[in-house]
Each structure stands twice: as C-alpha cells, then as structure tokens.
Image (tube, rainbow, N blue to C red):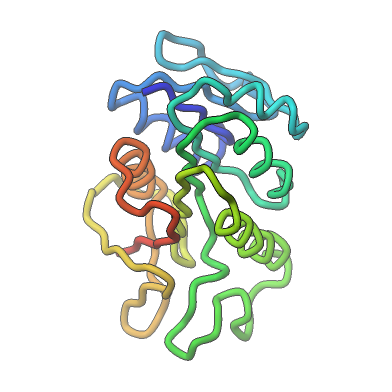
Length: 202
C-alpha cells in the first residue's frame, strides 16, 4: 500500500514507520523536520507545515493516512478537514488515553491527580474523536494507548479494549510503541474497527 504517515519522526510515529516498511508498504514520511529520515524506495520524506492546503496536497493519492502527532501540535480541525478534502478513504489516528474511562466511570483526563501539563493535549484528543464521529465519507479508526505509552519490545502479545482503560491489579496498564505500531499497521491493512475508537494494552 501507499501510506501517508503524519508525525513520522515521533516516538510512536518512528515505530509505525518501521512496522509499515517491514511489511513492504511505501510510506510518505511526513513531519515538520524530516532531516533525520533517509529516502529509499519505501520511504519518501516530506516536510509538512500545519497549513491545511499543504496537508491535503501531501496526503492526496495515498491508500491510507496515519496521523501520529500530538493534538496540541497540529490543530484537529485543520487536520481532519485536510484529510477529508484529500479524498483518501482510510484514516487511522494514534489517539490518546484521556477519554478512556476508569471503573468509576470517570475519564482518565478527569481523574484526580491527572498532570495539568498533559491536560490540553488530552482534551484536544477527546475533541478530535468527536470530530471524526461527525465526519462523513471516510473510514476512520482512533486507536488509544493506555496511560503508560513507552519504548519497549515488539512482543505481539496484548489485549484489546474499547472505551475503558485496560487495567492490571486495579491500575492502568501500559503498551510499548513497538507493539502499538503492530496494531496501527494491522488496521491500515485490514480494517476491523471502522469508525470506532479502541484501545490496547498488556
């Protein structure tokens, strides 16, 4: 497939890039600064601004778009609108844990002790999900990591959830960037959660 990856140099994005390439896909690897990326037959670096027209032009003609950017770094209104205008029919988003509910029914972002510096990004992630739910004419998937989203190993062993935070011994679990990338690539290749949010974790 020909995949447009927005945020290809980030912690999650770089692992998603590696996973897609390992499966034989051709990836247009996009970020504001792509100087760390090497061009090859499968990797086509492209510097990307936050301008909607630039994003639309950059992703047009691909089989799928994956976005792996912090919600405060690229306005969800601009991003979702640009992808819709591009005509690409498949959109996979690296979501956030902020909207996942705990057993008490309260979302992660509203839990006591949630770090204030992380709140704006989490709230924007919740907003972006609502934007996607209201969108027409595109097949989207919003994949949320649990609270702990960290470097690690590619194990291929994890659990799936939907709208609730996955727990271990009463505490939110974790997922590695490497295992998360597997699930993103799976959804690009074989969509199983169309127009849905879901989560994964150990």
